[in-house]
Image (tube, rainbow, N blue to C red; front, top):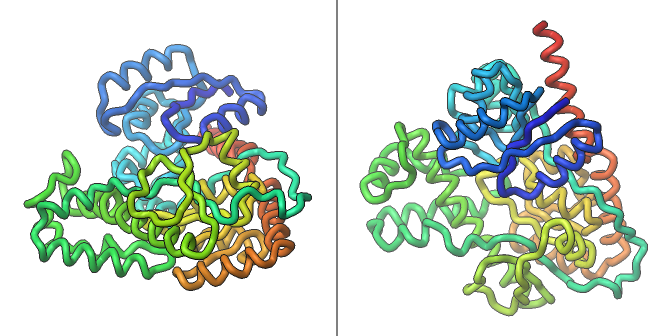
Amino acid sequence: MKILVYRWDIYPYDDIIQTLTKQGHLVDVLAFPISNHISDAPFEAALRQKLQNGYDLVFSMNYYTVIAIVCEKYKLPYASWTCDSPLLSLKHPSVLSPYNYIFLFDSKEYLSLLQREVPHAYYLPLAGMEQAQDLSMNPDFFWYDISFVGNLYDKNRYEEMCYYLPEYLCGYMDAAIEAQKNVSGGNLFPKMLNDEILADLSRYVNVVNGVSDFGELRMHFATAVLSYKTAADIRTDALNLLAGTYDTHLFTTSQGERLEHVTMHPAVSYHTEMPKVFFHSKINLNFTIPNIENGIPLRVFDILSSGGFLLTDYREEICRQFENGVDLVIFDGFQDLTDKTEYYLSHPKERMQIAKNGQKKVQQLHRYDTRLAKILQTIQDNRMKSM
C-alpha cells in the first residue's frame, strides 16, 4: 500500500513509519501543524496538495476531524489510532463517515463510539518498541533504585485559575481533586462538574474557544484542567514520599519546585536514552493521568519493552493485557506504593524475573508490526466487503 502518514510531535511515529516500511509499504509523511482540528484552511490546502500524489490510505495517531473531512471528499480511507483520551474530536459527526477507521486504545471511548453506531470503531491497545536488552545481569549493575520518566505538570492551568476564581469554586475544585486522588482508575470529574458549577466557571474563565454546550465544556475542563492538576499532585507527593527513604530519580522537563530529596535529571531522548534508564532502574514508576480511564498509557509499553521492572497504578485494561505480579506490579494508593517498593527492592531475583516476563509479553503480543498489520487487514477486509 502507499500510505500517507500525518506526523505530529509524538514519540511512536518513528516506530510506526519504520514498521510500515519493513512490511513493504510505501510511506510518505506530511508534517504540517494543525491549528484547528475541525476547520483549518492552510492545513487542508497542504493535505490536498499532498494527496495529488495518490495514496491508498491516510494514517495518524489520534483522530483529526479536518483530515477525516478531506478524506471523505476524496473517498479515501483514513485510519487513526488514539493515544490520548478523551478526544474532543471524536465528538464530531465526522466519525460517522464510512471512510474512517478509528482504533481506540481506551475501551471506554471505544464503547462510546459503538453506542453512537460509528461504523468502523475498534479497540486496539498501544504497543512497545523493539528492544534487544538482556536481563541476565547482576543487580549491582543497576544505576538507579527508583526512576520516573515524565512530566510533573507543575505548570498547569488550575494553578493560574485559583488566583481569580471565587473561594467557593476553588474549594469545590480542591475537594474534587482530593476525591479523585483516592480513586484507582476511573475519572470522577465529569460527574462532579454539574451544570450549575459549569455555569459559574464560565463566568470567570474562558476554558476553550468555540465551546457550544456544557458537555464540551465539562469534558475540556475535566481533562485539560483538573486531571492535570491531580496528576501534578499525585506525582509530586509520591516522589517526595519515596525519596524520603529511597534513592529516587526524576527525568523531566519540569522544574520540580515542590520536590524534596529527589535527584533531578534532564529529559532523556525517547529511542536512545530512555530505554537505558528503564533497563538500569530497579523500579520504574508509572502514574496514569486521570482522564485516561481504562486505557494503558504508552509509558507502560515503553518500560516493559525496554526490560524494565514496572510499578504502576491501576487501569482496567492493564489487568486484561498483563498479569499483575507476573508481568508487572500494580499499586493501590501511597501506602501500597511504599510497601511494594520496599518489597521489590529487597527481592531482586523476583523483581528481575517479573521484568523479564513483562518484556517477553510485549515481544509476543504487543508489537507494532502486529498492531499495524491488524489495522491494515481490518481496512482491507472492510473494503472488500463493500465492493
